[in-house]
Every structure is written in C-alpha cells, then in structure tokens.
Amino acid sequence: MADGVVARLDRAKAAVAAAARRAGRNPGEVAVVAVTKTVPPEVVREAYEAGHRSFGESYVQEALGKIDRLPPDARWHMIGHLQSNKAKRAVELFASVESLDRESLARALEAAARARGALLEVLLQVHVGDEASKHGATFEGAEALARRAAEWPSLRLRGLMAIPPYREDPEAARADFRALRELRDHLHRLRLPGVEMAELSMGMSHDFEVAVEEGATRVRIGTAIFGERAP
Ligand SMILES: *Cc1c(COP(=O)(O)O)cnc(C)c1O
View 1: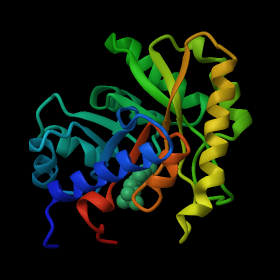
View 2 (view 1 turned 120 degrees about the horizontal axis):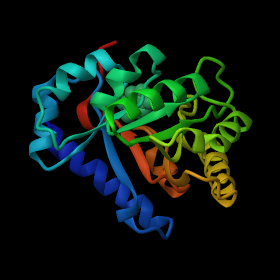
View 3 (view 1 turned 180 degrees about the vertical axis):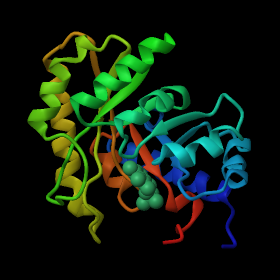
View 4 (view 1 turned 90 degrees about the vertical axis):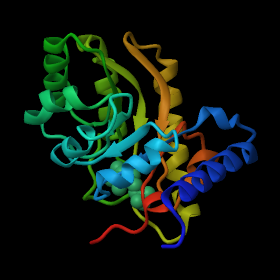
C-alpha cells in the first residue's frame, strides 16, 4: 500500500472528528484505539512514534510480544474474549479490559488486580445484533453484572463495549449502536455504586462513523489504519 500507517491513522482520526461534529459532538470526546492484532511490532511502533498511545489486542499471547517491544506509556486495551485463567496476565499487560462479559471473569480479574494492588478499568461487553457466535452479555446480564460491581472494588467499571455483526451497509448497525447507548444511559441513571458508565466502545473500520454519530466515546480501528489482515 502506497499510503503509510501514519497517513491512514491521521485520516481515520480526521474522519472520527468529522463524524463527531456532524452529530454536534466535541471531537475530543472520541478516542481512537488502534487495533494491532496480526500487525508486527515495528509497524505498531510507527503509530507510536507519530504520537499515538492507545492500542487494542484480541489475544493475550500475541499482545505480550508487542507490549514488551513498545515504550511503557503505550496504553493497551484487551478487546478479545478473555479466559479466566489469563486474568493475571491480563492485569499485568492491559490498562483496560473491554471484554468483560461474565461474572466468573469479573471475579478472576478482581482477584488478580487486588493481588497486584492495581485498579483495572473494565468495560462490559454486550451482545448486540442477532449473530449467535459473538461473545457478550445480554442486556439483562450486563445490568446484573453492573449491579454487582461494588463486589469488585479493584475493577473500575467505566462503560460498555459491543461488536455488532458485520453488515455490508454500515447504516444497518445504527440501531445496534443506539441500543447500546440507551443501555449505557439506563445503567448510568441507576447510579450503581462503583459504576461510572461514561464510555461507549463501539465502531470498527467499516462503521465507526455511524458509531460516533450514535455516541461512541471510543472506536476500535484496525484495517483502516494498518491495512487488510492476512486471513
Ligand atoms: C479486529 C477488531 C477490531 C478492528 O476491526 P477492523 O475492522 O479491522 O477495524 C475492533 N474490535 C474488535 C473487538 C476486534 O476484534
């Protein structure tokens, strides 16, 4: 690809800002998490050197090899399905676990964070759309988890994350993004102890503009920055 990573990162950020303005939002409210799965560390470093600090990985093992090779002020988000037996590793590596989807994982992360004396940001991953294969709590399950947040004082529950099913037309995801925002607002209104509900992590390369229009505070962009992943 003729265009470098830095140019594409800039373009993605400009598109995020434009979408925010279209929706009457402050572009500063929306952060870009650069999703680096399958991307080699030297390419991730190009984005880092250009000033970018937020990165997302889906697998603990793969993330390890990159986190080690980048300066410690890079901020890594776990965005993939996390097994409870990897909780300790995850707490060591990640600033945020966006894929908290069940109580057993919350308990494992709480124990690992407490043992480390850490406060770990988590987002609840919620299942939206109709694709049965995706992970995530149901809306009711997410509320039940949020209601228990005070039992996990080493976790800082700050919002929701979702991965709507891929659809050719990004407009088709709008209703899912809106539903996630409404759930976030609902949980926010409950004023649950230990719960902040500020963040909405939604939108990927093909639909992030719609997600931003619908209230995303965090978009997770891989392909549009780093190019197509090898299958
Ligand atoms: C891979 C991945 C992304 C980025 O997807 P792109 O379509 O490449 O932007 C975002 N979120 C999650 C959870 C992912 O696994």
